[in-house]
Image (cartoon, rainbow, N blue to C red; front, side, top):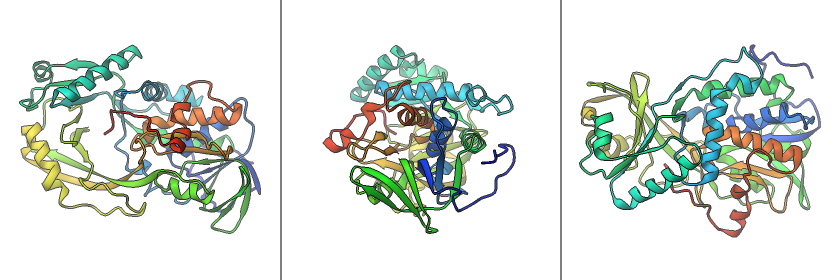
Length: 409
């Protein structure tokens, strides 16, 4: 296969060049491309990889609608370690990709600010902070007076404490990361096709092939499900049930008549509304009060949620935001794991060559480097070697036992 120049646009093709691949990845957005890139450069994997992506514009993917944030403020060790690696990967991106001409990723470490309005949640923040610090994070607990001294624009009348981290938390240019993972994977021989898997052939406890919408049947040694909000439909083709569904999330970008005099951390308000700096503007997101499953093709906006939920929460928490103007808005999807809102990664417990990389529930962009590396190790060695992700495996789904993460937004 002729190498692809990663600095030139690549032609979009729909038909695979081969009839058999060692690995077929269903979904070519950031998670699928992370798996593809880590496989393509793995010293102990020399197989052929096919990525099947239904929409090469990625315009309807969760990747395209991300708010591009990264945090280490989780409540479980594995999620903290996953994010610690993501911070390292973003910081040393050209070195990881092995190419000095790969651009460095722009970051803005304004941090996350969790606000607690009661002692129950304050206690959880204290426990989280103790664990985070033990794993190398720089999280600090702040009293209302300390928060006010650092960020005098907050209304803290109803706040007990806050949890804040200015190191490796905030915004990063996820578009650059995704673009170059995809480019470098293709440059290293990974084949991408604009097509769709419409059926999965299974013989006993193994996947044997996939059929594409264009009619080709492609044999595969391992299948990786990286199909985002469509993950359950992909799994169902192999006779596997997966508790992942599309859930709608709303984002608004706005300008303030009286801009703040310093960067706004990504602030998680007790109302559930979260807001941060976005260049000279601000970005705010929220979950709808009625959080039902939707079609992965449903991007309709709820035009009442701004007036009913978002703006009142903003104006209460930051009085300077009483006069603001929305400049853009959109709806995107979480690939929402209904069991515990944590990712599901690794092999199925019966169909061993069906590998999950699903159910990120809003954390896919920041967790994709660690998951891409882990899945590549799993395929190359049959085990995780850098970071053990087995606690996030399918076994808990089979048993119906949630892996509880308390720091979900």
